Amino acid sequence: MNFKYLIFPVLLISSFLTKAQETHVLTNPVLSGFYPDPSICKTGTDYYLVNSTFAYFPGIPVFHSKDLSHWKQVGNVISRPSQMNFLGDGVSRGLFAPSISYDKGTYYVVCTLVDHKGNFVVTATNPAGPWSNPKWIPEVNGIDPSLFFEGDKAYIVYNSDAPDRKPLYEGHRTLRLYELNRKTLKVKGKEILLVNGGVDITKKPVWIEGPHLFKHEGYYYLIAAEGGTGMDHSEVVFRSKNVKGPFLPYDKNPILTQRDLSPGREHPVTSTGHADFVTGPDGKTYAVFLGTRPYKGDYYNTGRETFISPVKWLNGWPVITPEHTAIKDSYPVTFPAVPQKGALPMNGSFAYTIYFKKVLSSQLLFLRTNNESWYSLAEKKNQLTMKLLPATCMGTGNPAFIGKRQQHAIASATAEMDFKTLKENEKAGLLIFQNEYHFYYLCKSIDKGKTVIQLYKGNEAGKNMELITQSSLNGGKDKIELRIDINKDRCSFFYAEQQEDWKLLKRKLDGKYLSTKEAGGFVGSLFALYATSSGETTKNKAGFSWLKYSGQDDL
Image (cartoon, rainbow, N blue to C red; front, top):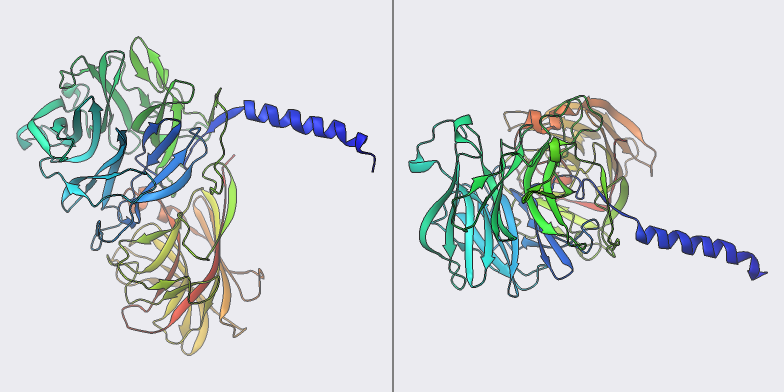
């Protein structure tokens, strides 16, 4: 071979790589799918971000990045059953709005366990974990706590009740502050009221929440969400010369919202708010915040996602969307991209396969705290073996359920399952799950002595699934492949008795049924491997070899 003919292509590739390294964009959403309520902190050149997980376990994923664009999950804050129990909680209860911060060698996460003990703080010297058991802060009455450190002092700011617990209108809330003892992590001194109602209480602002404090050029800034988590969601800002106030609002609030834009615009991002700020590698300010990507108005099945945007400082005030402009699909930046080795993709169109080897992928979730060993990765090589549990996804226990988030409006999940059907009450298969009442279940079972593939739907009663259709299986084999395709408001269901020899079971069922608008709550849909004995006891098990996911942005 004459190597002189390879010089020009090599130079082209080298030139291309150099330009690729110089060109970097932040692609929205940076975390696609159900990753709401982002909070971020910086240590040196490292960024760490956390999100709400509600009643799913492990709780509060921890992501790491070097460039604000490529994120890799490195751990979970609530990773041990001994830390916290979500049994008995509805899917959208549990953990609300964590906030992560760093000071003097220690990482802190504060959060709210609603309906139970309330607010707590956990610590770690490594954000990948392990994190401490929670220290409860009963004096902090409310939700969405956040820490602020200055010198030897620490403060906790949070959403709380109206003054004297006498709201003037629906959604009347306050922002309050306590000083915190750094060693004991207990409050000290008196509670201080920072904001009553919101930017302008005469206009009856609702649901002031998700506060964060930071200092910039001599001012203390207090940012918070306002307007609720729906289409009217926004972010507002106040500032003061004193950490304890008084805090005055920016006269051009809100600093982030999409509610004033035309609902007919292409590829809208809506419901933006619940922001947190961080300094980027270029020394400029960036905001992470939640948003949604709806179809046909206000329908979305993917939940609230994590977005990012540069922050502009205008006359001493930070603004995310000047003149309420639209959130962009991407933002060019001058600092280099730093891809994460071994990370699963988190934005754009992508596909990957989760294989079941020695440990479960960090992308996977249990439905509530997993207190028992009903699954195994060691019983059979390269297989996830799941016991059929009496608990069902319609209850508030811990069923045999292992799920991953739906991260695109157009998505597909496929699983290979090895399951010998024995009784009619025993079922195993693939679930698309929004909550206890809104799901579709594609499963293998027995009906009148015959092995069948069945499709069920949840219902508002939350007790018995509704059988939509079923089909007899002819091959007599235990192994089968299952597939669920989602195209916005349409769901289609397939099965294959031979590898990828797909047969349609049901096409274009209602996908809006899985949307937040119809299902309610604060979560997004999950594809889940699910096996149940429907309230009875059995020794039967189901095995899964892999779970494939693919999704594309609606371009």
